[in-house]
Amino acid sequence: MPAMPNSPYSGRDAVLPWVVVGALWVTLAIASGLYFSFPIFFVALLEEFAWSRGATAAAFSISSIVQGMLSPVVGMLVDRLGPRRVMLGGACLLGGACVLSSRIGSLWSLYMVTGVLAAAGVCAVSWIPSGALIARWFTERRSSMMGLAFSGMGVGVLVIGPLSQWLIAGHGWRATYVVLGLGTLVVLIPLIWLGVREPLVMAAAGRGEVWGPNPGRADAGGDVGDALRTRAFWALFFAYLCTPLAVFSVVTHQVAFAVDHGFPALFVAGIFGLTGLLSTVGRIVFGIAADWIGRATSATVSYGCTAVGTLCLLSLEVWPQAAALYAYALFFGLGFGARGPIITAMASQFFPGRRFGVIYGILSVGNGIGGGVAPWFGGVVHDLTGSYRVAFLVAVGFCALGSACFWLARPGRRHL
Image (cartoon, rainbow, N blue to C red; front, side):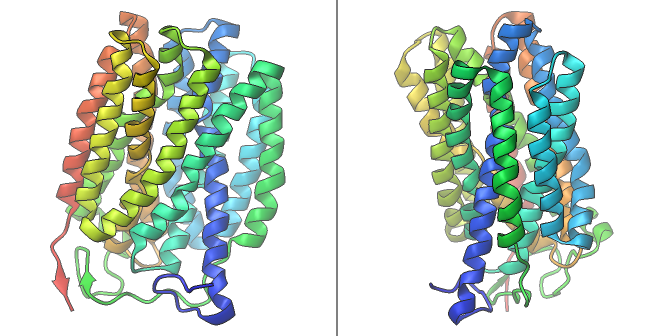
């Protein structure tokens, strides 16, 4: 087994980084798959309760807002307690919330269970502790390692989305929630307990280029106040804000949009899963590209893919053919989730040190705000106009704004 990039381990111990990355890969797959299965349940909930699309999609918005609000708290807990304990608590909360979701009977219960409890579990089990843990293991080629671990999120969407639709078709959405919740508890708790480990020796800073507001300091950006006073922090904050605004209004309503144009729900769920598969490829490819051609350039190309994919989906209004959905899955899927690993890698190099967890958590507030607005906005636009056209075009505009934020965050380089 080869040693990981810039890992202090060798020989038999070289397997430890691979175990950690593998455990994170599976954990992120399950957490992300459950989180992004909401568009599948969205259609089932509309059919049973006949709620408005804006009111129903608000559950996904509340979920994103709650995750944003809790991100600094989760980051603080990661710094104090370690990623493993935080992730174990998150796994229990996420699995339990899925089981409770089977009892949803009103909008307020949907908001509380899906929007609050499940969101808290996702936040505690996924990208903040995972990003902090990878930052502790590796310094060189960090974007590549982030992309590799975070690629599990795409596989989760690939598997859990179509699985949810198949279970809903055969057994109903309530039974589906129970199965997914129990499965989450059975898989994640032992996986995190056995597979999530912190390094015995923190990865040393790599040679060559030094990035960040104060190159040359081992603890540059380690203080929260110092980080908040940098341009890089706020550029990344707004990049995190723009990304869900470019993505979530599309993701939340993609199934309903395609079903509205005459496509069977199970087929659309398969397209949704294909999007997840291609996002796995995209996370890895754009993560590696970020280390080779630059993070801003890689993020810009990924935003371009997202924009083209959104326009392909919107083309169903004038050309309702399956080819448009496959083109959507290709382009949107490649860009879906590609920015997260790049932002995490950039933040871990701008603001290294013992306070990275809470700094990264504060950055994630931007992601929560954007993710809170976008699903609700898409639903309200449809309720008012009978179409998603405006919402999808606005999402394309945020692709351009998000790309600009990455270029503003890009620091100068100094060589040791």
